[in-house]
Structure formats: C-alpha cells, structure tokens
Amino acid sequence: MITPRTIGFIALAGAILGYGGLWPVSKTALEFTPPFWYASIRIAIGATILFGVLLATGKLRLPTRHDMPLVLNVGIFMMAIYTLMMHIALLYVDAGRAALLGYTTPIWVLPAAYFILKERPSRRRLLGLAVAVSGLMVLFNPASFDWSNTDVVIGNLLLLGCGLSWSISIVHIRKHKPVRTPLQLAPFQLSLAAALIAIMALIFDPLPVWTGDAIQIGVFTYGGIMGTAVAMLSVTTAVRYLPTVVSTVGLLGVPVFALTLSVLFLGEQLTVDLVTGVVLILAGIGLVSVPDRKPAAP
Image (tube, rainbow, N blue to C red):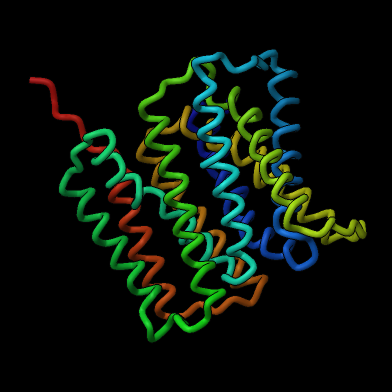
C-alpha cells in the first residue's frame, strides 16, 4: 500500500520536474514562438486540464464572492504579471540563471510581511535574508555580469520583479483565507491569467506560426501539462502530505533542476560565480522559508 508520505514525495518530485523543466522548455519555445502567445497557450492548456480533473472528481465549484479577491490577486500578480516578465526575460537571460532569480520570492516576502503584516522575523530568517542577498551580489558583481548590455540588465531586473510580484500574492494569501481550496481556485486564476496575457499577445506579438514539428508539439505539451497542470497539482499534494519543512526545502530543487537541464541540454555555462550565487541564494531561501519552531508547551 502506498502511504500518504510516499504520495507526498512523488508529488514533490512532480513539482520539481514540472516547474524546474518549465524554464529551459520555455527558453526553447521562445526560439520559434512569440513569448506572450506561448505563455497564454500553455497556461490555457493547464487551466483546461485542471477544470477536467476537478469535474471528474466532483470537486469543481465556482469561487465564492469571498474568494474573488484571491482569484484576482493570484491571477494577476502570481500568474499573469509573473509569467509576462518571465517570458520577456528568457529572451535575454539563460534559463538556469533565470530560474534562480525568479525563485527569490521568499527574499521579498520577508520584508513585505514585516511592513504589511507586522510579522517580526526571527534571527535565523534575517540571517537567511543576508545570505541570499550576498548571493545576489555575487551574481551581479561587475567582474561576471555585463552591466553595459541593456537587454541583459533589463532581463535580470524583470526576473527579480517576478519574485517581487509573487511575494505580493503570498502576503495577500496570508491575510485572506479562502472558502474554496487552492486547487479549486487554480483553474479560474489560470484562466484569468491566460486571458490577460492573450490580450497582451494580440497587442504586442505577431501571430504564432504552427508548424506541427516534434519540438513545437513537445514544448507546448510540456509547458501546458507538466509545467502548469501537473506542477500545480503536485505542489498542493506535496504540501498536504508532507511536513512543511520537507516540502519547503524540497522545492529548492526546482531551480537546481532547471539549472542542471540548462547546462546539459542548452549548453549554458556553469561558472564559479553562478555556482557560488546558487549555493548562497538557495541556502538563504532555505533559512528564510523553513518555519520557526513553536515553543514547547509548559
């Protein structure tokens, strides 16, 4: 019999495969598909699959009026804006580096939670913030980063903006408890994001050309199924069945997997500065993300 813990670890692996693989797959897709069209289509595919899963399991419900702020906030900030910035940035930034910078959300959540929610950070989390920021300084030091290349600078700043945009949703989620489950809200949030990005695509992108070759089919299939639907299902399942510490630290495998795939299949360079930055940032995120221990009852 498969235990709940085993289900949790399988789901965690699915989340790492889905979200980690999405970065190099998206980088590949943008070689022949306009960025906004790719983003909109793969998110729409993911939303359709999640609608189907909920319908098949009898759990499909419309969001309540109380849930609508979360549908709007997550759909706009965590999905639409994040994805728009991610796909623009991938035009100029290596996928491995992009995944790492796009995963810096906990760094921005900590100060946001302090100023907005009045959550006082522990010393360990402040140490984690300092360690992560030192990792960013390594990645952006003038000896290894070309500050004269405007496109690259903008791309990297957009990726940091991804983390900031996601953190806005995280802080709101902490304050606003939903009636429906996160999984029940997800397809509605994804649908909103897909629609908003499609509008941007109609305005700024040329229409995509469908060739039907194996690579094009592959990137849309992976992006929609694994990188959106399966990844979201996996995260919600892992959080449900695994201890918070295990799921939190385990998800640090997402940028590591993205970087590994990018080096192996896209020929991206693994430099000393990049490795040092990865270690420091992930160590800092781990210190920031792991929940504080509750004091023992007297």
